[in-house]
Image 1 (tube, rainbow, N blue to C red):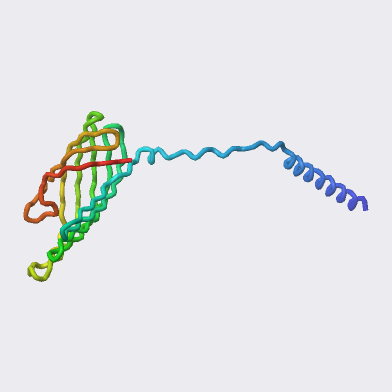
Image 2 (cartoon, rainbow, N blue to C red; image 1 turned 120 degrees about the vertical axis):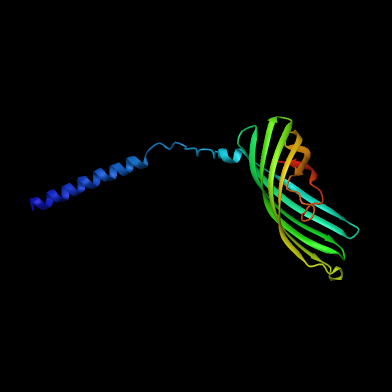
Length: 185
């Protein structure tokens, strides 16, 4: 009987101690805890998005181009990036062509206003001629290595580039020399 009552007392005291701890935990002052602000990754602070859009229509000729790109600024002088390109070119009753591919881009800014560029471009060309011409369809890969220079103001660069791998007989472009406007946000 004494053992039973001491067990009951121990249980009672144990219950009382545990209950008081739980009340103490619940009775703490409520302090508003602010969530830390989300910090933008250092990587994304150095990324710029840009590219080009082209539309040329008229007289049975259509040329539509979409060419997004992104660069990563290693420092204020050097940027590296990638680009994609998709084009549709058509001359009514002559031919149509689908061109798609990608590029690797390197930009160097020796001073704030001057931008030098190197771009390695690989494009898949699929051209279909009108049966009247009896020219077989052409499907080939075209590689271009462009060296360029331009005047830069903020995020806009206006300049020209030259394809050092230009081959007049088997190429996407009609000329090795090309002007450009480059915009990155």
